[in-house]
Length: 278
Length: 238
Image (cartoon, rainbow over all chains, first blue to last red; front, top):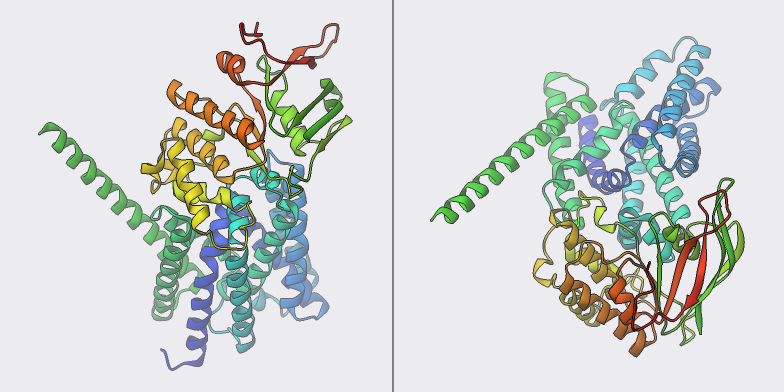
């Protein structure tokens, strides 16, 4: 399996995605934007469909459309502060509808490619995609190292961040744009329907395991690597779609860690009760 | 030197006036307490001062410089801070250390002096022993205390505090007021605080601003009673 060029590229891509996912995922969860990633992945389908319709490389139209919508999402989030899910509902259905209409206009030939974007494909990862992913990983890693303190305050409380003099609007927009670009780059690999799960689940699992902020990122990377590699091997072995297999592995890890945590807590409690009885 | 100057401020929620004719100053070294009945728009006034809301009329001048002509650092504790996101993955120490970021440490490592500041702040609210706990595991009162430790760790030029003593026991409250008074009296810090603590108002405040309902207004609109020195013999609360 490891001698095939496409599998080598799949493992390289999985490694890079495992580094990105916990960093972005943690901020998405804490900013209550887990669903934003899902919205952007639906919208990105429209970007792909547009590229196919006008005969331009879908990666570029995808990035352009997703970034524009990411900025619009931040504007709508500010507008509907209390009911921020309204913007998600509008844009998620709008993105999907636009994608379907554009696909309808581009009759013939596009269905197979659209399937690849919907469900992802490890066979089609190109050298160019690996380089894009590497560039993105380096950029996100650097941005995290430089801006983790301002982002920590921004995610803890936006009003505290504002009074501390941080440009919260600019930071929020740039974060959305970065998330949009990441989704546009990862989407052809893992599929539009599951890209948000792969971004969010490692951080969601590690949040239950670590007390500290940096700890969540570190454990998240280990979980992401475990889930991605196991999922890829499983996908190759059973011929299942990689995105779906990886997502199921993450959900199994989530279930197992929750169960183990409960058992450990129960043991601790009973020990405490026993010591009190003595 | 004035840190806050409010000139004839009015604020409307859509078409409904909630604040009118508000004018006062908070200077370096002032300990100012803001009181009023529930729903008297005290938090709205603070949010106008901090720039989180825009006044409908009048203006707020929040100084950009402190009395040493350096950038003014504001320490804000919002109302019901104890209800912050319980799942936020952070230890008590991480959160209180984040108070130092505002002191020019956004892109630098915290040094020995910063860490000493953090230790003293946590000790001042009796939370040093709990520094490695996850913030979500704390009680409401403990969360309130670490929020206060965080603002002390910042060592701001101006404290803006919205009912910071909610959920505190008598001893912790006493300690908190003494520390705040020491900061304003001996270090020239400005303090603007919304409170319902009658006794402490009498003992510690230099100025008292009371928001009272405007007579004759068809709206639930509040204005200042006056800006006065609180009586040291009896409380001015009704």
